[in-house]
Amino acid sequence: MGGRKMSSCLEEVIPKCLLLTIWAFLLLARNGAEAFHRLATTEELQKVPPATITNRTGFHFQAPKNWINDPNGPMYYNGIYHLFYQFNPKEPVWGNIVWAHSYSTDLINWKPLEPAIYPTKPFDINGCWSGSATILPGNKPVIMYTGIDQQNRQVQNVAYPKNLSDPYLREWVKPDYNPVIRPEGDINATAFRDPTTAWYGHDRTGVLYRSRDFIKWVPAKQPLHSVKDAGMWECPDFFPVLMKPLVGLDNSANDNGLKHVFKVSLDANRYDYYTLGIYDFIHDKYVPDGSSPDNNTGLRFDYGNFYASKTFFDEGKGRRILWGWSNESDSIEDDWGKGWAGIQTIPRAIWLDGNGRQVVQWPIEEVNKLRGKRVGIYNRSVESGGVIEIKGIESVQADVVVKFDVSSGLDKAEKFDVAWRDPQKLCFEKGADAKGGIGAFGLYVLATDDREERTSVFFRIFQLGQKHVILMCHDPTKSSKSSDLYKPTYGSFVDYDLRRSGGKLSLRTLIDHSVVESFGAYGRTCITSRIYPDYAVGSNARLFAFNNGAEDVKIVQLRAWEMRKPLMNGA
Ligand code: DQQ
Image 1: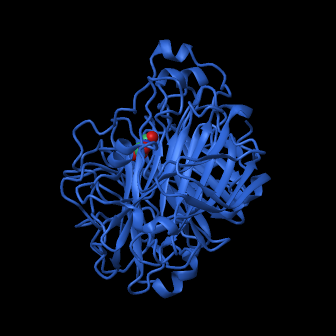
Image 2 (image 1 turned 180 degrees about the horizontal axis):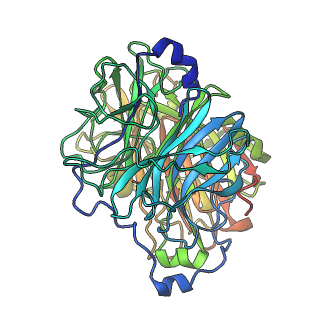
Image 3 (image 1 turned 120 degrees about the vertical axis):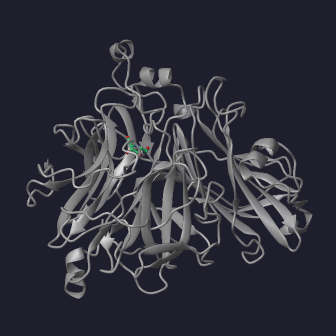
């Protein structure tokens, strides 16, 4: 959706067209609907309990009960934020998908509304899947979403608010002329979905789908961008970015040389990848700048459990905001037991890093409103092998911001082996306990008193020639006693110049019962994990700073706040 309303551009662009990107996922195997797109059995249906509070998050977006997945059509309209999301109204597993709808004035406190879009018509009778919102000329929002039609084909439909004077846009109307785009020619009708926000383009375009009225759509001769053998792309997102902290742009902004982000959710491994590049708006071609691989070894918004993300331009505050879905990593049986599954990560402002090579993300400032009691540690050394408990707050629901100083040991960092190409593997192999030169050091979160149960959020620093390599990891292997849970170690290298920062390295971690969301080096690397402690729950959850490296590490400043619970969809 475009926050700088398309109407404001209309005068300058009369000969131009509205363009909408629709992505044909031709590389998908015949069965386009992936594994989790499965309906519950009758036996499972009979087991649905009321939602329980087991490991239920406190300040992350979630539904009162049942299953949620992708954030859909986030938008800011007349002072109100709307978030739609893929929702199963009946069960805590994927199925019966509708567009649930919530609104907020601060992106933190959410009130539920009735589902906005649900199967009623031949063009969506088998499901209302992901899509996007766009603000049309005349300040009119429109949603374009994927409907699963009577023949189980994926088609693109539009829906408009029934009453624009309703501040909450409660009811949405699906015109009978839907679908506006059908899978035609050699397009795989089971892998043709997830339209992204439309933007103004140039009239000489020959790509994608374009329209002057959002009703009649003309197919493109060539895609905006394509990659060979990439597998299926879900939920593409395409938007311009500025190198100004916290500042964003409308989707239609297009000065020459403006950097764009092209994001795809890769069905093959269910991670979100992006490249940075230039959008040639004369030829409607996106050209990655080559600063990172354009494949499944490339940059990610989040190196953990984060998928099907979607951004929008928040015209109210002039920023671009990113939402992502964080799926459960417990078992399906556990989800039936607790009666709910899926959360959205904390909304993050997103912009271009000063080095031009990556984006930076930071929790929106409104999240700070939830901060309650605070404790701190200042200028304290964590000796080799040392652990410091951060006492005085209930850390099961907390915001921790820490600045480490590793400058005194920089020359003692372990040598980096250039064969270590896979940071996630390196995090797993070394874990949080192996003694390096500098690190592992960081936080134990959701830990028991004896730290038998804990999730480790940490860095390791290596030397490579005159430079340093920073590894950031989440290790949840000890996060609960259950051995049958999926507890993947996550990790990434952090593109950050430690010498320039004088050896200072920051970490912010949001802890919320069953989710740990971390931002390394002021949001240059983000990792989200879902974990399910057995003992480190409620007031038994502890927080520690630790240093398992040979060199001492200094905590310049550590501040930790208890987080209050916002209004969360009536639950
Ligand atoms: N989820 C939706 C699809 C999308 C997938 C269905 C991504 O539209 O491709 O719930 O998680």
